[in-house]
Length: 407
Image (tube, rainbow, N blue to C red; front, side, top):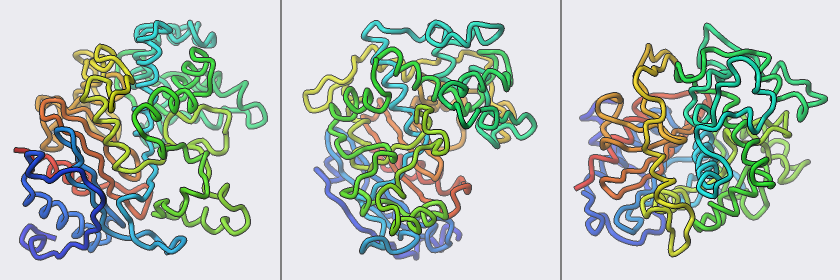
């Protein structure tokens, strides 16, 4: 659909609760009209099934909207609503990174600490050089997510003994070897964040999800955000049903009940910390996390993290010369902080967001962004019917439109 055709689209928008108006937030409301037509056009062209966004600025949510459908009627709902839960997938890694920073500011560990000081299996060879910072920034060289490096696939999952998962999953990551020496390349790792989850559990003495809930979710007022493995009947009516995997789970619901929808990212190996994905949330709850980050670690009077720890989200922890060859990126320069990439105009020409915006994308797809300069945070999702699909217009293009409204 071309630019002129998009201007004729009539979006079908469902608006959720807000605390202020776009004008009060210093945002051009006309650009919300453009955003709605953009999302509706993607739905009409069957590129995405639904789209939603929640925008916060200067202390208030000023836009909270949803468009599109679920893949089927689910407990009386067939529309995506502003309060619909969607799996934030890899945005879960942001919470894991914040948990690491929490433990660091409490003196339990530090970013440059060798992983082998927590996990003895890493004490040999090049693995000895891997640090917590390498895991946070995907520069450890450890096994990439399948499909990231087609010419160098490492079957970490296949190397795990299904009968002894807890005892073998870490050694399996070592047995499949490194793609590169630690610190040399940015390689989106399959195992790096589960290892961070393991470190969180050993340092805190708690399950990773329990530690994150106690120290981050509850203090940020994110009382409904939960790991999918902890699905409850009171929430599942609001679940997004988007793709074939979701439909397959629904087919099991009459026999299994709520447990049919409860799964972890590594659902066939539940002993592995679910640190790479798995959280269910809403746009409204996710912008509370952004508000906490923008308010130097305070949310509604609750201290969550200190501003010094949070400054590591914007720190370039990878340095000059580290490049990205994943997903066919052909050596793109990388700026990466403690858990999130930092978009700079020098290195990232894929969208029109402010310089130094931190963000994380979740497969499926959703994006969480924080803009310190503009005191602005956003969460949006553009749900693809095929869970392996992705297109620039739906993801990066949507973010560019959102940022275009800032005054």
